[in-house]
Length: 423
Image (cartoon, rainbow, N blue to C red; front, side, top):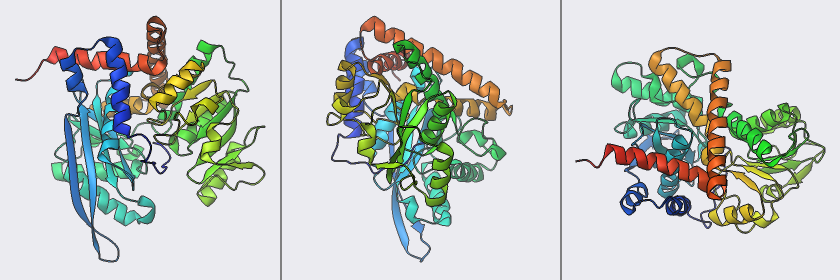
């Protein structure tokens, strides 16, 4: 659900980062070495290579992944991304982060993730449909409404989910809406799903602002990434009285200290496919954007954006991770020492998976809720989860990420221990 950006794999390996974050929490919890060994590994890693006939008649072989990190607390849950730089280690890290994300907000899922190495920007709609249907067939031995439920992620959307659902249903011989979430409303999607990641992030920002005594009225907001999560985060922050002064996408960013007109930004992006070039505002690079003077920074792009090289220059009082894995462990330590409140990804952007859970429940029951009901239930989950993490952070004198991990890891460890080791 984020804007695609090229991942610089010269930076930290995402899987190493995920393991380091887990180890920090495991040390604080004095986790049993046997349990640590179980939770440091992914339960299942499927690699598939499949042919797709391109428009010119040439057959190309694509590589895809579906990884389940831990399914002790329920079916696997996690998005599918299409990107040229997808790697197995990236997918494993994202699957592990999904395990903790579901646990920290208390929804009954384990963590999973999928990806295909491809460049969707160079493919027609027909090629994307063919690729999606073949990839679905290849991973169908793992997915299912009671086994593993995919969702949209980078470069995938509601239409992609519709193709997956249809392909899975054709194989099953009957319609199976609950096999994916993030679907169009016409085939069992949920009200409020498209804004859910951003809405959940904003609920946590409101709580964080209360905790540090920050008045959000007129607070300056910078958003990196102008896909689904970034666009709606900017809109929702503006609606509660904050001032969005900069946004960016893969092309770069735009900045206006007086505040951007988001209607103009959105119209320009729709027309040109980018935000940079908007008349009457200053151009900034993605790197410069992160260091702008502001109260709230929302990284809503992709991994490896804030590291030891730029964390000392970040001026925001709150960093709200609407993206997955934007901050390295080294940067975490720097920001914490400087008194910056980081709302970690596994908490901040859990609104998406929470409303995905609501969608799944509605599909299984064939009973659908109004958007107001969904937003109220989402708010309840996010506010309670934020305050649970904040209380744990204060009690243990740790940063918010370590506290979120401690809460999540203890819940997954407890479920694994309670179920026991088979046989």
